[in-house]
Length: 290
Ligand code: SAM
Image (cartoon, rainbow, N blue to C red; front, top):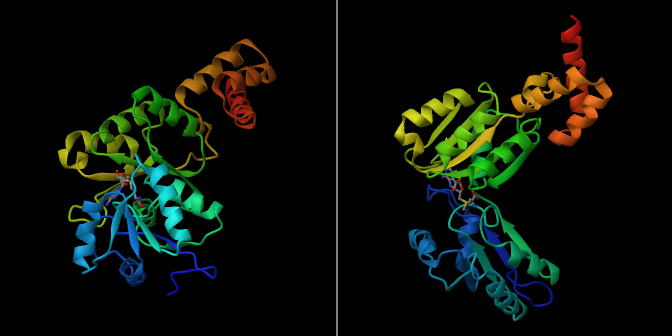
């Protein structure tokens, strides 16, 4: 393994670490963590557990969301001096809802080498066992903290045909599902992946309505760390492409004006795509005359 590039600059290794089960780390990751000159960690005490487990003694510096910009500049200078660095976060793949983006950008912009050392990631682990389409998906990170912002977030994604995925904490899992249930149909399939790779790993695939009841009634389902995966809207059913409120707006407008005007106004009000609203309007119009 060459820890320096051709100009003698150090390389930055972005190293994935376990998301629970300490065995989920690659041989290559352990080798890198042993051989680099410095490990930049989100929480130096936290990463010590992992390092001790694998008998790794190495120098640590902290790089967390509150010192990222300053610490990244210092680390870039060290790379320029020929010092090799491994970047790790508390769990999983750095940068994925974790610190590291400013450092990686800075190092790339400076033309130095950034080497990924792939491994655990809660998002990918959850998707791999969910049984929902993964050909195309969108990762949304953590949801907004307020209920109204979350509802807006759900409205914006209600008609997306893609699978979408978000991270959630035990403090907000119930509130997030309650907000989701106000916007999406109770039939929408979702997967709750909880405590992945740990003792109490639970992966439930069910309808949104049933998931909500489960989380409300079983306090264990409100403990630990969560990935939530939501099935995309079914393209051939207008009901699932639009929220009940959006559908009502279109229906009222259709009662008052022509299809063209109703669709144009609905685009303005809902922000939905014209094509989608037009298709829904045609179906509603057919229903009216049937
Ligand atoms: N960088 C990490 C990754 O690669 O997955 C994610 C870090 S983010 C700060 C932490 C969030 O990831 C948790 O709040 C939870 O939503 C999700 N997460 C991390 N580990 C998990 C696990 N073992 N099971 C389920 N979700 C997990």
